[in-house]
Length: 392
Image (cartoon, one colour):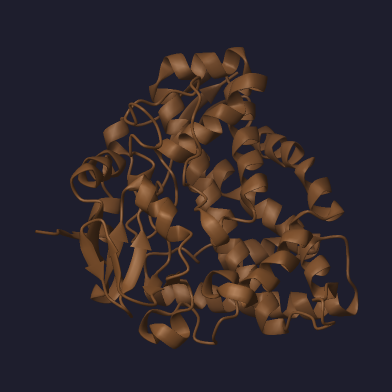
């Protein structure tokens, strides 16, 4: 019998990855229940996740095929709701912008942003590192990417503060305020472009001479926020917990950060990845996979946290080890929708781990590990807070 899993229930548990890894060994494909009771076929095994994420029979274009599960009411305005030639055309343009001089220059500033945030914490004390460091770091980077004027940044941060709230009314109000601000920002960039990613996209044109619409540009801003902010913040904080509770791993990182910081980031992404599951896809035809038949029009999701604990990705997946070669994990997805911002996200996580581990000789949880709380979500995996005691 194929089980039906409530993603909300499992995401708030302290050992979700371990439970999902065990489940994946028994059931490569299961049913999961999402917000509002919607159910979807959900793929857990790493080989099948790789196979189907690259399979054109599973589509992100929900509006024409499964409108009840579409993310945006305005149609396919963002990358994760497009497929085929339309998606390839849009992705090529956005990919070029991510490789622009403006973004490459920003990569060199990530260290400065991280050090400024740590300077603010001082030499010793107790603080919530999620609130004081892991959240602000990627948000500062997003401000730079979008070219948010310095004078607007306090307002910008205030508007996005509750975008991941568990309360739907609060979340919607925050999202509306954020999108309204992004609309005004797009208008400003059209009038006076600056050296940033958003200006690159505002001025870029497709091969036929057309450009992205305001709706598409605002949609891109929302994707950047969701894909680049809380996911990175959660990855930083979750990996810090593992380093602190695996003292030998933290000691190894301190001894050779140049060699091991990037490896620690990769292992953290595999071991406690912040993207629990992908957004919904839809089957364009009947598909036989993993011993089940997914019928045309049914929803499909991919449980990346389970796939990353599949022995096909890494031997002894329940062992956290930063000093061992890690085959490519699935934290950033796979196939045509592989995360475009993964290089910058990897750098932010790497810099964060290196700077924290080497700056503080004392670094420990300020509460017992069992008192840490995980957010309830059907797509994300992250802590609600990370109280740490630190000293130099």
